[in-house]
Image (cartoon, rainbow, N blue to C red; front, side):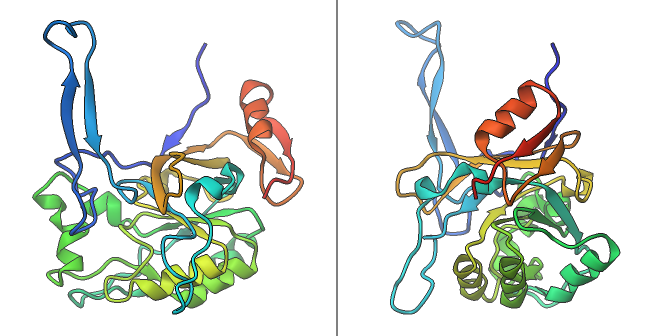
Length: 275
């Protein structure tokens, strides 16, 4: 029996892709089992995988929220429910810069104009910012150098980045998770202030998404499932949208049990409060 239709928003990770942050360990795979006796029947590989690699989420402890060193919750302390919600797609493809090493800001009016054209953002919505950056630049190397390495080193213009005021606006409207098709929530020339604004607002950013343009605004269900890394500052995972799930939101965010029930049974489900 065929399963539910979904849209995969995850980038591929591999040694040929720009899936690592400059200066951090690169992805690597080393065969550890297989091909020769006594392991001729099975094969396995050992992976070098950084917490912030490929499609991943930043936990609230990824950056300090103040100059005294205060950090908030690690990834394994965050409920999975916060990573599920109705997808809202904000088109910011017009936000592009031309200064090498600098990111243009995505300001609050990009969000409010979108709301005026569609409907207000509600608590529990997962707001996806569609810049088209990964669609254009997340390619096999060396072409993929333009995705993160060249902007971060000042050899190319930076990706669009959410201004701290935009993150404050989203937090005021009950948003817990956002999605970005760029290498980082931070700007190439200002990494800290957007992260602090997000974490102070209780927002977890899912970075390195792709295919956001395939998602219909306000329709279906976004789900991101991070690896359960103990005390993790973030974790890779798989991000998908179930486009045909007709979800009736009785409260701010779905529960995992309700999601399972809605996938296994009818496509319409009332979702309990588990924010």
